[in-house]
Image (cartoon, rainbow, N blue to C red; front, top):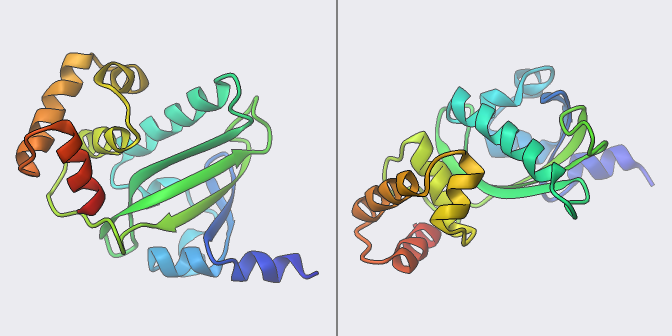
Length: 181
């Protein structure tokens, strides 16, 4: 079997990384992000994030998550990513550190564009995007606060802002609108 061909033609975006630098990617990633190979190879994952702060915080969450008992060296979440043209979109990201003791050393990451069934309908701040993603995962204010290193009260303030933007009366309604948005 030609593994290079399988990697390149996989029906999901795949990236091989080293210290959060893109070492290789397949055609699906190029199409999803609207980029050319030379735009991505040898560059930091940071260029795929809406902001430097989100890139940093996600990196910290990945390390913390991979240190958790039972993680098996895997990490997954739904997050907002950025295409080469600057357009933001929801993306499901799953990754595996080849060495869970050094999560950023080498990894393989898959990317699934969720924009066909989850659109961004309201402009969100970086923190609102993070909290929205964690609300979708079903986390409480206390767990979100712990994960992001902020107080549960701060999470509640952001949740209230999201509810106002999405015209939701309850958290379940907000989550529903975020999933359908």
